[in-house]
Length: 638
Image 1 (spheres, rainbow, N blue to C red):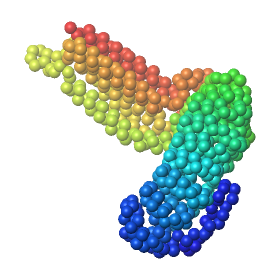
Image 2: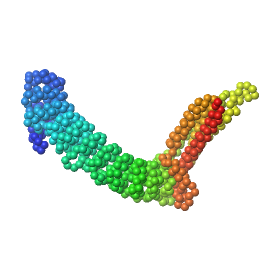
Image 3: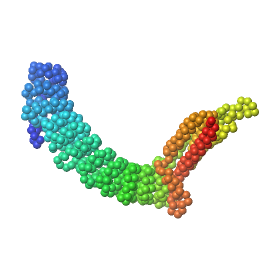
Image 4: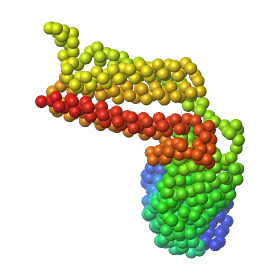
């Protein structure tokens, strides 16, 4: 394209345009000396060069910038005034290779005084149409500073040409939208207060309030206080049907949501996007319980809304595994009716909670929501059938134990057609872990054996008791021997079980692995208690006893708590007890359910029983062991 002869659209008013032809490149290529003088703001030198060679006024740089482009870009106002003395009006409307006028260059660079000067020059020359020129992206001189957050420039342009705020660029974006995106409060205030017909348009049919949601409550407040002509910003939807309230709800900023709610009628909460989602669905799906509560407070019947799949906000919360939002629905008696609501696939919130591997949500629905656990969806599947699809062991145990504790059942089918839950991953994990645990067990056995041969207090060196332990008559020493022996025997037993379990590779090898874990854990606890008993036997300072006792006691209980948390399913202890109770001594229908669960999930019952045994046994061992050792140890301290 030959840029020496091109047409630009100039408007003497917002509603009219005139075609003006300019020839910015007729003067040839700008000399390096002139280029450096103008860019550096050397007014005397630049003007001297131009007087020697008047044609230099139309010479251009590599990007077809003339002297006025360069002076405007670098903010040299005095030089611009001198250049204006040449009386060549075409300089103000001349374009570079990006179709920028000098006003574009000054506005982009943020030189507000230069912008004001160029606007004044255009007005003095009667060439106000220059202010409406657009570059190759369709941006006016107001778009550029708004995009870059130059508040002072926006103020200058809004004061002299307020109608420019109504223009959009080729992407359909207004200066106000760009000002919001740049986080420039000054620019936003200048447009909203000085430009009566300002456009708020943004990409994809968004408006400036959509963008303001992500800039903070202060920016949202500015736009809510603005009263534009035409439809309110809060009720406008983008190309996907999303209103600013839809944008604010998943972001979780309660102050923004409340601000928007204060500016809209309650019915605005009913508005749904192209997927049928209301703002309440969106907030629930993201787990923002306070936002969901605020939306339901503003519009209580919004809780009844369903999306295109027939799901309520409880379905959305359950699908995302958001316990707090589901609990919000459980707490409100008026919402209990929707807890068992089925979507178009026949799934209840419980189905979706199980599918999302969210045992805490399922447990809350069962305990306090009183939901039905046997509802079948359109495929004939109950929530318990969804649990079989879980690939995580702990998720499967948590879900099955929770559902079975409340008498949930699977879809009816012949017992010989029931497929057992795939425990292949558990078997692989056991094989990988067995070697490491066997090494640990051997090390514990070695430490226990060494401790028995290097007893505390040394040996008798003379008399009839030569070679005997000096502290053999002390009760705390006897506690040391018992605990050390217990650590040795249980660690050796753990090694045998681990080696046998790995060598057998049978379907029930997990049972020997479980027993080995119990033995190894008991050996570790016994070894720690034996250390304290040995310390108590050879020390008579009470302070040492108190410090050691408190450190060991706190450490053991902390270790037990951490390990219990790591190996426990994500359900409460009372649910596990309820599950065990239902698995014992039931007849009739419940007995049939129990047999089905035992057949399909054989590891669940064993895991729950072992977990409870682990917790109870270890707490008893810690309390009894520390009690005995501390009692006998501290009683001997003088």
